[in-house]
Length: 234
Image 1: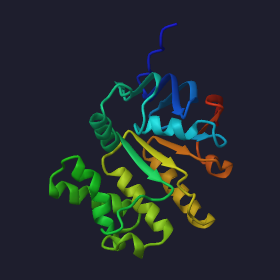
Image 2: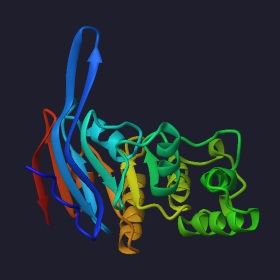
Image 3: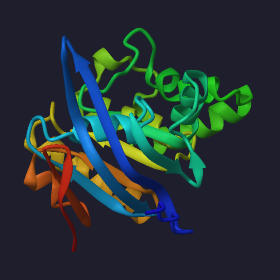
Image 4: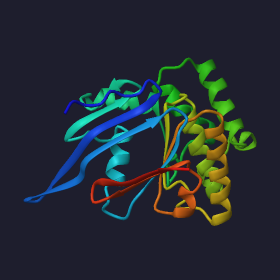
């Protein structure tokens, strides 16, 4: 059977992806033939218990890992056979990461943290300043621009991470347990912000184990034992 072509409105298209790891003398199959298409401006939650394969799938979507077999196309571009340098460039330009642990550089201020992907992308200084300041304004942290991460609350740090994820106008915002280190009230604020970004046209993929967080998404993909158990839209 030949692979199905990706839709013209598809942001990403994964076809029969298998991922195996060698652990000692054992081979562990983390993904066992996953096929998934996500369209532009979709808001998708990926769920599953520990060991279901959701972190492996996230790593492949985020170009942090490559499939053992199967194909992955991002905006029509085959990424499963790219070199490490090419994958790094795709990560910087096409994917905005929001991690549970924020992953900010502690020794520099908010502006410098948000500007970093633009430096990697080779943007001129004046353009970097304009884009970074606009992203910081969009998450409501203009007055905190010169503060370091240690001077911010958890919610403010996650807002910085979201601003940093936005600056290169990525194809996907990939949020891994984005409220995991936040109290419930701050978590609601972050989910409201992600909802606003989706309303502006961003494609958001949310990896979570919490039903309450997944309820914000318009589509929920559940994994179990390396395969998609269910894929529901509301």
